[in-house]
Image (cartoon, rainbow, N blue to C red; front, side, top):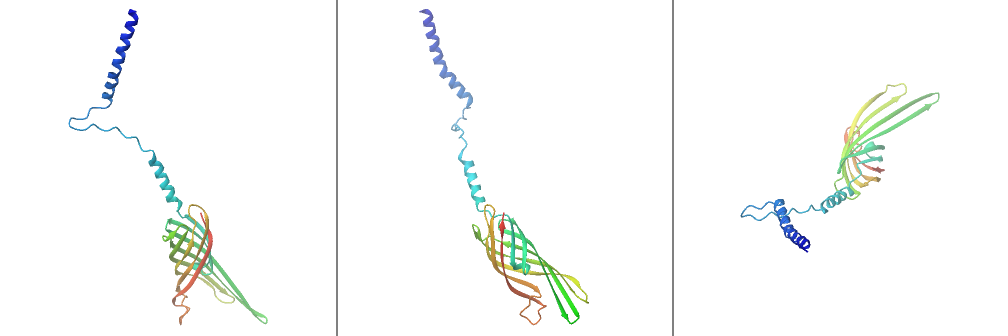
Length: 223
């Protein structure tokens, strides 16, 4: 019985000391607030939903992002008859295009035993910029312009021949269907004006500087 009583007394003492020890540890973990100031609140747990919100906002911004690269074949336009082009978006609303076009023609005339021939070729490098800031999804208004560098050569039988380098400007406005959020089909159509020597088709001197109303249409892909 004496031993049982000793055990009961020891267990009671432990029960009395346990809350005091826990309070002492809590006092050591959280230092008391300065006198006259309220105690500092406990640190709040980090919000778990913030990263998810940031990720969803980023996905929403990239969902409507135009394809940065495109290749297309253009009829008429800055290459005169046609051109094969590559365009790169330097920013989302501005694309820079570089293209190439080659045209070669020849003719031969015979009169009895004599004949004469002539040939001409034209190499064109259109370089333009297109602003596409007015758009809704894949549909956009295209406004731009640039310059086309030309290299022409001509030859005729029994006469001199020689190459020549020139350039002419252009401005354009039209409609563009451009893929967003990945690769897809691209389509362009609009009106254009060519400006430079030799485009004065409505004046007295066709070799002088003039403006020629023109158009363009293209099919390609963005990626």
